[in-house]
Every structure is written in structure tokens, then in C-alpha cells.
Length: 156
Length: 68
View 1 (tube, rainbow over the protein chains, first blue to last red):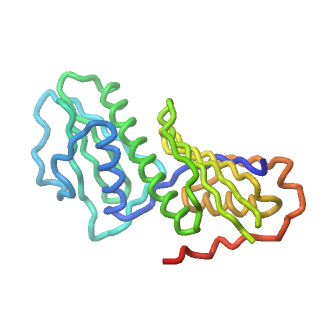
View 2 (view 1 turned 90 degrees about the vertical axis):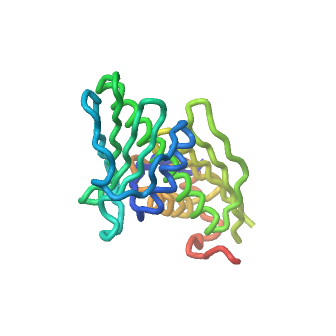
């Protein structure tokens, strides 16, 4: 052994790179993309009695001023998720549903945000590993949903 | 020819655990630093005995890009 370190993810990327991670997370968690890359303000407003929870993702910065205020709408049963980039460039997840508590919606939004982060980090790490000539020895999804990747490269 | 191995575990919340194996001396720190730049920032780092062993060859070339 030589070194072990723990890294905290920072989501910095363009809107298209976030969209890739969002669609990956949606597929993994059973959400269906209803409307992709839509302008904010044109969607139907939430109906009355619908609970709503908004979660802002720490350490996120989506680049591209010209593409501000865009969103993706996802659904799963009665739950509706709105993933967007706010005017400050931060990544937000908003969960809405009838007949659910705020705590339940917050859990759904948090789970989705975590999956997006995992997908984003996975894509970025794999891209960089390949660019640096690493060979993927093994890759597996563990029982706790973590992804374990073993890579190797030979140096002179 | 030395073999450098890295085990990367991406937890379900996106936090990443990196374990560099086979790289001695500063090389292992260079790998950790490079991956920290890719992922975000270092939360904690622990050096183990292999770090203090002499390098077989100082430094690694992480600027070399994939061919083709």
C-alpha cells in the first residue's frame, strides 16, 4: 500500500454534461424523462395541494451563461422531479407529489441528487483514466450501490 | 517496467475513495493529486509505508495523453 485518500466531489461542468448524468441517474432509479432541456417558466405550474421540496446541490457549478434557467422534468408514478440550473449556476432538484410528506420528498430529491453526482463522477473519472492510458482491470457495483473500479498501467 | 494500480470506489453519494498501489514515493501522491483535480477536492489522505520506500524511478508522466 502507498496512499489512501478520500475525495469530495465537485460538480463543475456544462449543461450537456449534467444532462448526461441526470439521464443516467433517471434510468438507474426508474424515472422517465418527460421534457428534456426545457426553458424555465413554460412548464405547467404545480397544482394545489401538491407538496414541493427543493434541494440545492453543494459544490455544484454549471457553466454556460447563455444556457441559464434550463430544466429537465422527470416522473415516476405520482412523483415529479424538476432538475434545473438556477440563475447562479447551481444545480437544483425539486421534488413534487400529491399525498407525500416533505420529508419523503426530500429523501427522494436527495437520493436522486446523489445518484446524479455518482454518475457525473463516474463518467469523468472513466474518461480521465482512459485518457491517461489506464487499463480497466475490473469494475463492479457493490451491495451498498458503490462502484468499485480497479485500474492499472505500466510505467518505465 | 513497474505496474501502478489504483482502486477507486465511488460511493452512492459520489464521494470517492482512492487507493494507489505499487507506486512508491512521490508517484503515489501525484496520482492522488491528479484524481483529486478530476473529482473535486481532498477530504483526507493517509500515507502508508510504501510511500517512504525509495522511488524506482522518480516521477510519473501524467501529462501523456492516450494515443489514437
